[in-house]
Amino acid sequence: MREIAQQTCEKFEILILRGVVSQNHIHILCSVTPNISPAEIMLSVKGRVSRKIFEEFPHLKRLCPL
Image (tube, rainbow, N blue to C red; front, top):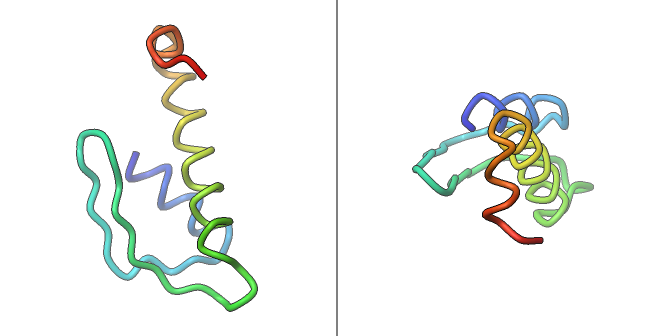
């Protein structure tokens, strides 16, 4: 998860100041330009992380109804 979050932040020019990756969640303190909202940041990071997790572990999709 850490690597995917870092790659996503780099792609959107988000500077991670601090971050903690736990078993089931991530905390990120970041610096961004004013034209990116916190909601957009989280949407991007969560979307890419969840896609990669489900690609790597497809059986989890059945356990997590959408």
